[in-house]
Length: 270
Image 1 (cartoon, helix red, strand yellow):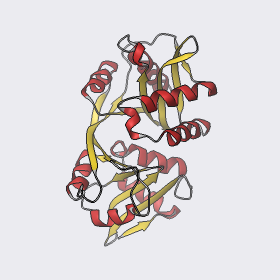
Image 2 (spheres, one colour; image 1 turned 90 degrees about the vertical axis):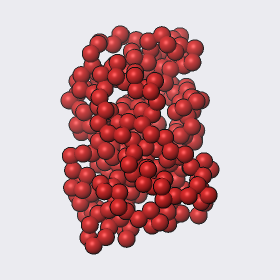
Image 3 (cartoon, helix red, strand yellow; image 1 turned 180 degrees about the vertical axis):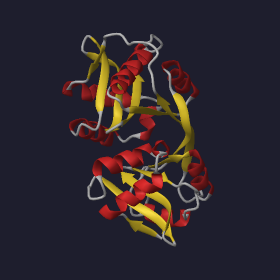
Image 4 (cartoon, one colour; image 1 turned 180 degrees about the horizontal axis):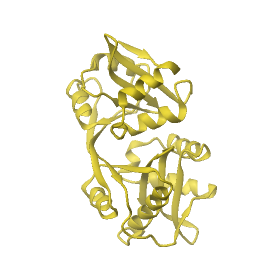
């Protein structure tokens, strides 16, 4: 049975996740940051005989799913999704396979992309000094770069992306870094989420005209070095072999396999 979580359930969820929070980073960090009483997130548990089968956290147009044994009810999850306008499901690879195997594309067309979660503990080369924190005036360019990217942009609604970036930055939940040439942003990366002791680095993108010149490595090393100096564990997600190779050059090592289910129509029809 799926139930909506209350404040008293937060410790139960934390205990269920345990030390392997890297298998559900956004779920774990959003719960830590906002809590069940926040309007920013909506949290549920699938329970049977007082045992947790899965945890679901809704944030904007996505749901983060975590299940240790993948023995939760997909039909019940489908019913839950009918009341939430989601476009994406994020979870471990095994969970994505389990959901996909029990979800007919005739119900709602979808694609599954597999990737990795990786951690870095040391940056093996110092960055150059051209990397700087983004100013408020840079965000319009940042949004346009991310949304216009052939890979990253596919996962976002443009207005929602702008809202997320600005909201997270104002709340201190995210920091955006840029490399600029003549006041034009040519490279961007950010901490997409931060709490005490943990950070996710994400949204690495370089203007097409400046690619393959070392800017991706430069800004990626800079942001990782900055956050590691603060004593935080630093994680990243990636889905392509090209991105995998770049992460390995910087010093990342993989900690689990990941999955992203993207529904082809904009939102779940209620």
